[in-house]
Image (spheres, rainbow, N blue to C red):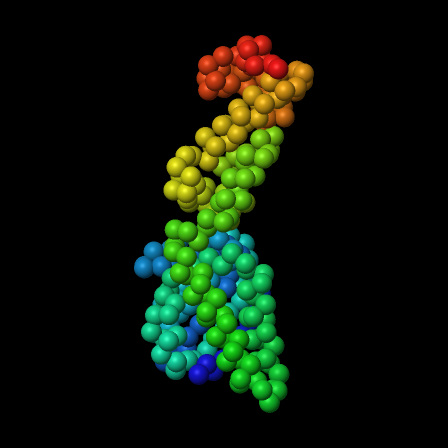
Length: 255
C-alpha cells in the first residue's frame, strides 16, 4: 500500500538552493526535474537534463541542486509496504530519463490533486496513480542507461542532416539535448560512431554536391545554403572531402 505524505508540482527554488539530507524511516521520495540538475550519484555530483527522474529510499542520501539558475522540480514523498516496489523494481538513487515528460507529469499532477481533496475514493485513486507512476518509470529504466537519450539524439541527427544551413556548434547541439558539451559528444559518438561535428560537415558536403549537380545557383549561394560563413572556407573543405573544387565537381556531374 502507498501512503502519500506530500506532493508538490513544479516547485521553484531560487538560485543557490541545494538539498542535502537523509530521509528517516517510512519516507521514500520520487523527484521529476523540470530543469537541468546536478545530482549526487555514487558519491559524485553529475549533470542531468530536464526530464530526469530519481527515486530515493529511506536512509539514502538525497543531494541535488540546479545546474544553473532556479531549480524546478516535481516531487512526491510517500511510504510504501509493497515488496514489489521496495525491493528493486526501480533502482534507488539512479537517475532515469523520461522521454515523454509532459505526459508523464500528468499522473504526478493527479496525485497532488487527489492528495489535496478528501474524496471518499482518495486512497484507492492514489494507490492506482502511484502504480502507474512506478510502472511507467520501470519502463523508462528498463531501456538501459546508455539508451535513455537515443530518441533525443536521433532527432538531433535528423535535424543536422535536413538543416545544413543552421549554425551548428557544440554549444547549440548540447543545448538541444539538455546536456553538457562533453556528455553530448560522448553520447553522439556512442550512438552513431562518428563525431557530431563530422556529421555536420558530411551533411553540408552532401547537400552541396546535390545543389552543384542539380541547380544553376552560384557557388557563393550554395556555400551559404550549406551553412558556410564564407565561400573560401567552403571551397577548401569541399576539396578536402571530395578531392576536387566545387566548380570541377559541377562540371563533371551536371546533368
